[in-house]
Length: 406
Ligand SMILES: Cc1ncc(COP(=O)(O)O)c(C=O)c1O
Picture 1 (cartoon, rainbow, N blue to C red):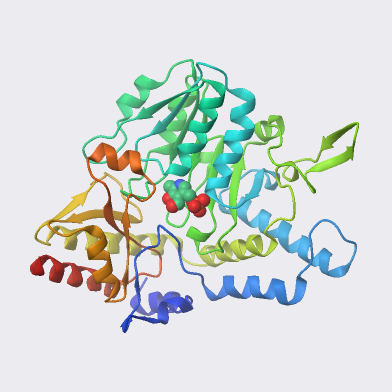
Picture 2: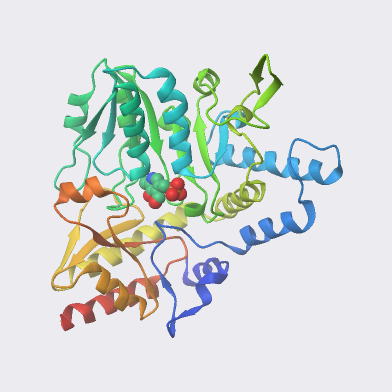
């Protein structure tokens, strides 16, 4: 991708063109959330302006159009992750809600005392706490895959944890704090040898890596729309039909039923069984627009440009006196964590913000990971397709100044 092509891509994101604190915005907090291209803004705005109606319910024209667009969005998302059936795409509020759905529905109905759930040290709290709640209620036990000194999963330790009591392995595709890309197909294949199910938290993967759920062969895959250039409040749980069919509903209300009477209620078919109440219609349509936007790009060229930018960033960070990289995984995507000697991350972030540079400091909702590293938090820079060399160089220059000053 040449500079002009990249500039055209970046121009699609209006929020990037602003000044912050008197400086051009340098947005490097993409692991928290990404900005939205014109196509997404137009799709959500267009829905509310013209087609606004509830879905699946009314006989009128607007409801027909809304329902068509809403279900077409589901089809787009199925194509995006190569799901075999669009009924396997369940709309949720995001990755967090998708994991809670599996924990509450599958976990509460399937797990019993002594069953084991394997997580990893680098999980986001969204893939820890739902399982802790279920473990407390069912007596299931949580086991944790440790990391090696680079920040990669210790695969030998993982294999040693697997046993016939293992019912589920639930791990991130990409770490939000360290950027580690986990070998998900290998993790899934190993889990299958003991008959365990697998859930992959793709929140940090979908914007960066091509995801093929059939190739990974996991049982569940979850992600959020807002980290994928789509709206907030919408995300996806993908699961295999056979499993989703067996799982009981978790939230109840309209849309998820077939027939209701006070003598008893029967439930709707997939995917509606898991979609109680009025869904985030504009969100689903906006997310499909984000996916269409991404699929219309040369994703290979974007991935190469992002990898080159990450290499420039990591190389530059290593040259800053007093800067310590936190984690150097074999394969990195999206994020890099670091600490500056003698300056608190929060102070550094405030000084960077005064120069228009947005990045994230803290535990990144990964407190167990921070504890295992013996630190309370890091500074994290995270990239998206629209970041360019100017962004990376602005951060490096500002960090050099901080390092000189302190
Ligand atoms: C790896 C990972 N999983 C889950 C989540 C939760 O995503 P959300 O808050 O959009 O539900 C995040 C958010 O940062 C994440 O990075």
